[in-house]
Image 1 (cartoon, rainbow, N blue to C red):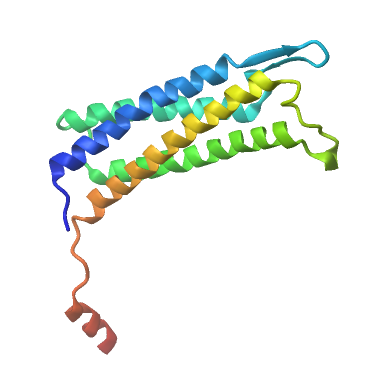
Image 2: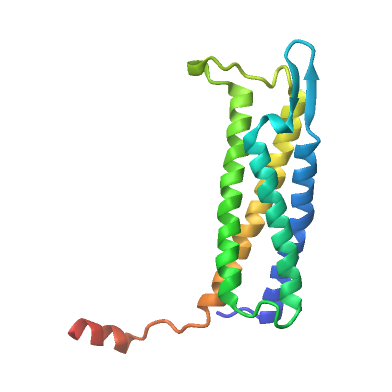
Length: 175
């Protein structure tokens, strides 16, 4: 069953456009996230390498989404389907790694790590943790969009090829 090319292009474009505000919101929530505690001091975005990594990946993925939306509509800008395929796969993988970084920060903030004597921090920094949970959700939605885009770009690349015929399989078995 084939897909209508114009519907597929519209879905592709919509997902890419949807990613841009999600990325901007994730970045803004992360960069402005801070909380001061009288007993423990100030906690902010710059204290966490994983958050800085996620902000970088969000900025790159949002910029990439904007570029690819333009490239979908401007003839000749990017003409090879495999370029989208490879870059969509790469961005999806980077999104997975940055989501894992946020997940780890949140896990440690809520549970601590008794083996290395880290206590949980969300009791003292509840606002910071709540905003970080929202960042996690927005980033997870963005990842889902990029996973769908990776499937769409894979379909575009691999639908150009015919599946192997039964005759070719029989010839290979004979040799």
